[in-house]
Amino acid sequence: MKRVYLTTALTCVLLLAAFTACLRLMNLSGGRDHLTVGFIYDNDESTPYTYNFSLAKDAIEKKYGEKVSIMTRSNVLDEDMEEPLRELADSGCDIIFFNGYSEMVRELAPQYPNTQFCQTSYMDMSSQTVPENYHTFKGEAYQGRYVSGIAAGMKIKQMITDGVISEDQACVGFVAAFPTSEVISGYTAFILGVRSVVPTAVMRVTYTNTWSSYAQEKRAAQQLIDEGCVIISQHTDTIGPAIACEEASEEGEVYFVGWGQSMSEVAPGSSLITSRICWEPYVIASVDALMSNKKIEAVVTGKIHGTDASAGFENGWVEMIDLNQQAAAPGTQEAMDSVIDEFKRNNVDFVFRGDYVGVDPDNPSATIDLHTAYIENADTSFPMFDYILKDIITIEDTASN
Image 1 (cartoon, rainbow, N blue to C red):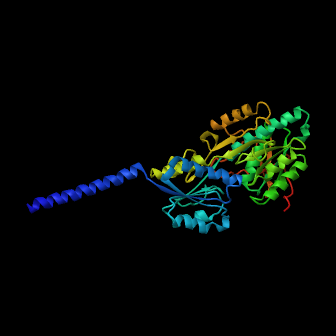
Image 2: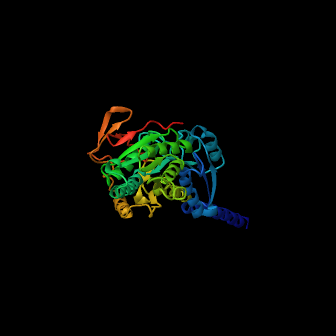
Image 3: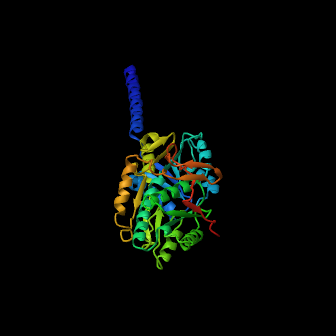
């Protein structure tokens, strides 16, 4: 009888072990029930760049609700990244997203193998050795810049037709933070979009040498307007340029082309169109991947280069928002849609191409001939075009403090 009890007991233990193993396998195949997600912002949500990035956090909360716990840290300078990064990782974050440019993220990732680190790309990672739990990503911003250039070009063409300006006054201004390839690629795509409509258009660029300074950005935009620029755009982080355009529009026709966040509320009369990188597709796909116990790059839809990813209009990583129908020239929406359709079909070789010569600003003897098309984001999510178009783009003196 004791043998029967012993056999029965052993059988129960084995069945319990098998049942537990099955539950574990089911959990692995079915995914996780909860994730802790961290966000580190280089600024706060009052600035267009960070506000636009924070929309991805909102999208996660909307999709997953109580299945995710979200922790955020704002106004973190690159040089101060280590403490909040370690704080979030030590607090149990399964994945952390960053919109800053600090190399500290890549350096510290190996120390936290159970956390995935996803950073908006800040350099070409194609030749870099990176940890398996470190990822970079960015929407192909040049596509939106080019399309917004078309909207600007259509408006300039209308202004010429209406006699507001002459053809030799077709000048756009650009308030830029730093002369990095990311910034240069963006404003080059913008002027090439303008010139696809108005072939005589030229551009003036002023650097502020800071990502975020309302006063400097506004002053730089005003300087460009005073020099005759009729449309202003930017690659900086505040609403300063939009406000400058709105104030100037009270005395004459000046329009603003936005970046990251619609400026229709702060500049209702002068805001023309905005392009934005949509961070939501990548961020949501990354959370989906961890929820289902898969590798991030196996779930993300886009161009994958190791642990780096990018995409454009074709996968919803770039979009145009808030075309001002009261200010836009007739036919603007149709003109933009036609080019967006080309991007969605992955026809991209028309952007950085034409009768142009680009000059390396750091080495004037190095040039590029755009009779042969340059393909942006071919091997990396980080924009790499860093030539100044000869006779088309003029770099102004740096905006004064």
